[in-house]
Amino acid sequence: MHYAGLQYWERPKQPQKQPKPSIAARFAHLSEDTKIIMKTALKSSLALIASVIALHSVPALHAQTQTFLVDINTAALGADSANAPFYLDFTMDYGNSALASNTATLSLFSLTGGTAVGSATTTGSASGSLASTVALTASSTHPESEFYQQFSAGVTDIKFKETVTETGPDVGTPSEFTASILDSSLGFPAQLFTTAPDTGSLVTLDLNASNTLANIGTYASLTSADGNTPVPGVTAVITAIPEPATTAAMFGCAAAIVAFSTRRFRKRQAA
Image (cartoon, rainbow, N blue to C red; front, side, top):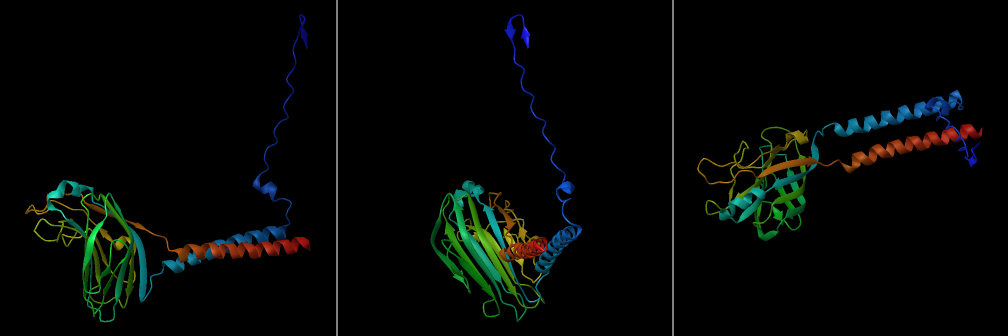
């Protein structure tokens, strides 16, 4: 266009964008037989994954292994330095089932702001170190096992992985696992006063073959009536760890079905 001696150029019109085809349109060229095969493969994959999940959710009749993470916040101990040294304590107490044999393995210890100190004190079958792995067993041979080891006063948080295995019939009184923090307010290592039913544990678990994360008790320290535990606020939380076998089985089954369905689809297309 030309106006009063000036020249203007019209901007070329941009081609209109074509709308993306719908999902139905993308598969419209496929034959009905092919669509049926794809739908069947998808339904089979979902059904198999659901079956795998269901099988892994059924409690074992004779044994069960449960794995979870424990996080104990010990920052409040900074105000309790007069009652140092402090200790991390684990116990495994046997129930009354003659056939039961239960174990707890603790590993991957992480102590924020400090380290483990010295060697551990152990009784019964307990063994190990906070620098590596701790193991306890509760059985008729070792009805009581305990492990405790000092950690430095600057530690503000303690994390570790716990694997508990329950073996035997669920009859009578179950074996019990506990985790606690000990201080020296009484002149010797003694549990902090807590909100737990036993008034001294931060983590408790009564072992049986149908344990879930909901069966694990977590508690917090309180100021005791006699003043032996002057600082509240030491707390524990737990986090579940997905079983690797469950995850691998789910994806393995789905991959196998998809691969099988793909081969069938290609053979039919070639025909």
